[in-house]
Image (cartoon, rainbow, N blue to C red; front, side, top):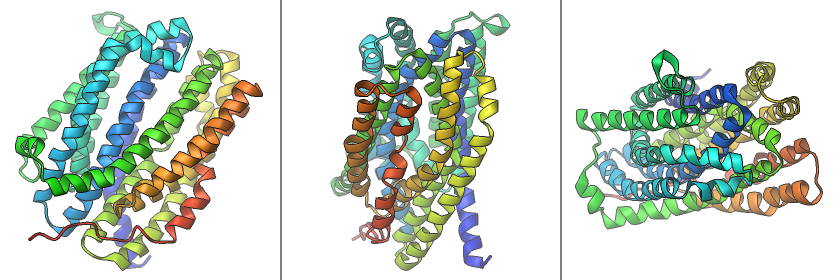
Length: 451
């Protein structure tokens, strides 16, 4: 291996391993909820899975905010203008605090209405609403902590950000066990226990973030930047964020529609889809870490003005993403019997559905890994956030969602066939991603020169 490739791999591993671990730990929260609630009954598992779609939608907004944040932060950090990152952080917190507060308010005041979006089963609505009322406060905590964690990743503190978020996840899992089952003298609260565990752990994560903000001097939260942002920098932030936000919401609503479709195909389909989705999220941790790390590496090089080298690096990162996707595919496929063993409380019909869904999730990893690196990493690093919006809008709403609705509600096709069709999204857009990548419009420096 030549020295240049060695340097790239080392740089990528330093970024990817902490972020992959962070993604893994976050996914373990959902996995622990599903595993522990599955021991109670199938309805509890299904209800929390559907209620979790509210947090999923919020994460789409926060994800878009952090993409715009990372686009600017990576390039200005690479350029050496570190003070700009405090101004960028103040701008992004203005938006994230407002949106997370609105989600908290909706989940606290109208949880039944939110649950009816995802299911018409009265028992699932009742159970899910009780979960949402408690977990709603964690949404506000997320709005602050996730934006600061993003800045930490872009300022060579990826390992420390992983330590903070992982500590909160471990705490979540421990409190889950204590309150769901009533261990060590704690009350047995079931679904409410899972919601309390999530809220407490998010609060602890925020406390750790605020501690980090006070203890270090590199990039801090300043009220003056939050209340009085630089107009030209905020304009840049909005310019690069709104396509990502629209993309996240449009893609996310399309993805949520797949859960809505599955939610109307019976509790067996909902329970199997819940487990399959958790397995998919766990398997995708490495792929998503590579995508995020790729964006930071490319962004730093573009900010430094190394455009030709950034182009070569992007080509190598695309190859790495496909290899990582294939590896994730094989690992998930090998774990199918193990996952089914953990989901032993599911009905025989749900187990049959789960086996097929996990097979689909396995090969899905290849397309997911490539898309995360190209659209979420490389294109965004160069400020090209509009392609993802156009691509995902057409793909989800002109192809995947209509085909899924027709298959489920018009043709009444079997659940496995419907699930297969709903999971073609990463592959139907891959040819267009490759074509657009090779046009190299993303190779550009978007920073401003100080005067």
